[in-house]
Length: 289
Image (cartoon, helix red, strand yellow):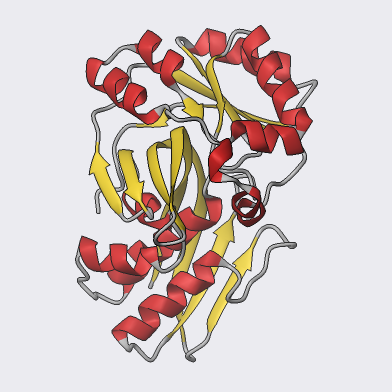
């Protein structure tokens, strides 16, 4: 028996960070959404006890450095099931792009293996496993529109976004989240983030308020290290995208459009500057877990 599971990309409509000096760690305050750009995973049992991961991108690791492998290992250990797993990942989400591809793959493995082995794990139990992978994995387990706080462990479902389209553009570079956070000085962050205004815009169902509210506290630092991202943002704004911001720690920049025609215009204008450009709707509903 095999199970096919989709792993949707995520975007940050806002990403605020607060440093908790007493704990020596960052506290997140974010609004995240799933978009219709997904990896496709096929998971099935093996006759031995091995975990084997194969991907359509040859440069990706297939051992414990791969989040999908890590997820399989965690749920296998937790359930004490002495069976192996074959995991085939057809990658469509750009890698190291701030779109949560690895985290979403891991979440897809947890959902799939829970069904494959009839484990009947609760959502809370799966969330605890996801949290051991990284801060994005719990969100990716649930998907939809969520207010995410803490270490990624506190999630609150939000209403659907106002009707709109998104343009995603990733230049040919990757950004290390670990390096960005290591270089980040709490004193360099703005006093007020974007999350409160984004939450208000969503509850008001106001497209104009939403595109004025989006933002990312890490943009200045990342753009300073990677000036091409600042140029990409400016071009997207020039071509008609609204609410343009970086997602995650980059390198993908996102922008809104009120209509599909406007989104396609931005897409066509960007193609000469950036090869990886996508026009996608937001997935307003979660994974149904």
